Length: 352
Ligand code: HEM
Image (cartoon, rainbow, N blue to C red; front, side):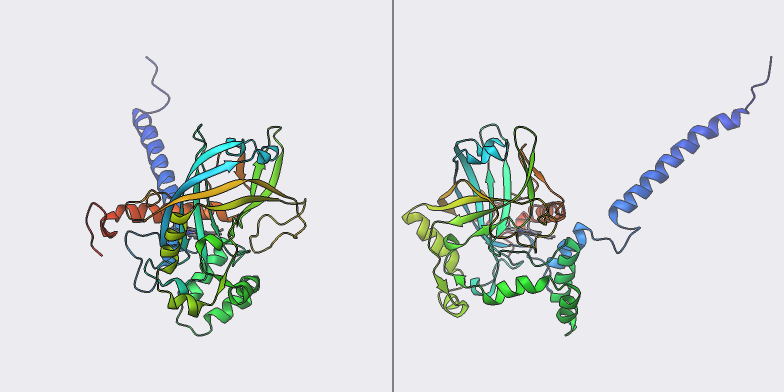
C-alpha cells in the first residue's frame, strides 16, 4: 500500500494550528476593542470616567445630567413632518411620551443655580412601536466640535493645572461660541420656559427614499421670564423641580417641535456650527407635558435616552456625536442600573 504523502503528525498539527490562529485573532480583536493596543484611543470608559467629579461618580445615578425629574405626556403630530420623513411618529396622531427634565451635572444634589445647562429627554412611542428617543439641551450650539474635544474639555475643567482651561481654549477656539452663550444668555425661572435643541444633525428619510439633513428643537409655549442665578439661588436649591411640578399640576405645558432643514453644504458634522437663521423650518407637532413624577420609582428612571434609538425614517448623519453618546450613555446606564441599591429609596434599599 502506498504511504500517505503527509505524515500522520502533520494531520494532527493542522487543526491545532487553525484553533491557535482563531484564538490569537480573537484575543487581538478583544484587546483592540478593549483599547489595550491603542491606549490613546477615546473609549466610552474614558469618556464616562472623565465626567466624574473628583470624589467619584454618584452611584446609582446618571453619569451626566444626574439631577432630573420625570414626566409623562403626549406628542401630537400634525402630519407636516411626513413630507420629510416616513417615520410613523410624524403621521397625524397623538402618541404617548415619557420624558425627563434635567440639569447638565454629574452631581444629583447640585443646586439649580450652579448648573448652566438644562436638558430634556423624550421617548415617543407610536402604536407600531417605532420609538424615537432624543436628549436635547437649552444651549443653541454645543461646546466642542468632536467627542475627543469633549473629553479634552472635561479633562481640562477637572485639572489642577491653572493653565489647563487656557490651553484647552487655545486648542479649541470653537469653544468660545458656547462660552459666549454661557456668559451672555439670560437664565430662565422654569424648565417650562426653555427651548431645547438637538444640536446634533440627523437624516430624515422620506417615503421616496430621499434624505434631508435636519436638526430639531422644542420651542416653549411659555414666555421666558429671565432670572439671575443669584435670584434663582434664593428660591432654593431644588426650585426648578418644585416649580415644574406646581406648574404642570395647574395646567399642561406645551412645546412646538420645529425641524430645521439644512441647505446643501451646511455643516452637519459639527454641532458648534449653527446653520444660518434663514433655513427652512417645519413645525411637525406639539409636545404636551401632562404629569410630573419624581424620578424615584418614576417612569424615566430606567430609560436611557440614547439619541441613536431612532424609528425607520430617521437616521444618524456624519455627525460623530450620536454614536459616541450612545456608547457613553450605555456605559452610564449599565453602571447606574447595576448600582440601583445606592439610589435613594429604591426597593432594593437606600445606601446614600
Ligand atoms: C460625547 C459627548 C457626550 C457625552 C460623553 C455625554 C454623556 C452623557 C451621559 C453619560 C449621560 C447619562 C446617560 C444615562 O445614564 O442615561 C448623558 C445624559 C444626557 N445628555 Fe449627554 N453626552 C454628550 C453629549 C451630549 C449632547 C451633544 C447633548 C445635547 C444635544 C447631550 C444631552 C444630554 C441630556 C439631555 C442628557 C439627559 C438625558 C436623560 O434625562 O437621561 N449630551 N450624557
